[in-house]
Image 1 (spheres, rainbow, N blue to C red):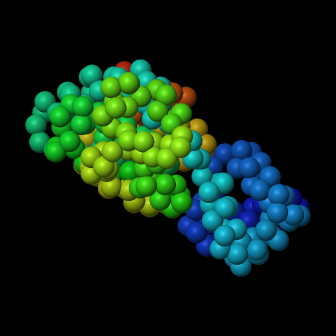
Image 2: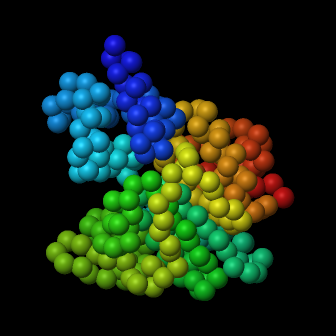
Length: 260
């Protein structure tokens, strides 16, 4: 009965929001949502769904809890150093503008890290960054660009001075020049169509929450969205063991290049 209750909840959520929870790992998602449901005192997903339909604030909380909003500036610094010293300069040498997509960007630390690197290389006039996420609430925070000071702990010291400004007690804000080349947009990775012609796609630390079938579909779509020779940059727990099936080649740890 409990499994049927959760399965019906998944169907109803998909019909209402176009979000397909069946593409997430069931045990993790069910545990997260069961905790949320019980916190509000509902003894079944059917009762919880009825209240979600009635209460917009409860629905917003549900959407926020369902999505994975963990992000940091320069997360895994060594990988960002490879982006700064090797991959972005190589692509810039080819001439012309560069189109970058930060997929599942959460509260914006990742696209702003990309913007820092573009500015540091003097390439801000040639780089455009699309940053997308499913959660409208985190996108609002990303557009605001205000963060706790601890969030810059991995940012190189010189960059802290150049690209952040104080903002009240214990907070900092990204400089306006970083915002200038980033566009934030709501996007459902599992349901919405992908744009194309990207030189770089960054999607880190979100694929681990999806089923294997969902991952395969997303890697194919990411590959098609890249220009030949473009790069896919994934998270430290998301190594692609058979990249060839997606027309990708391993370039360096966690970087994959679309075959020309």
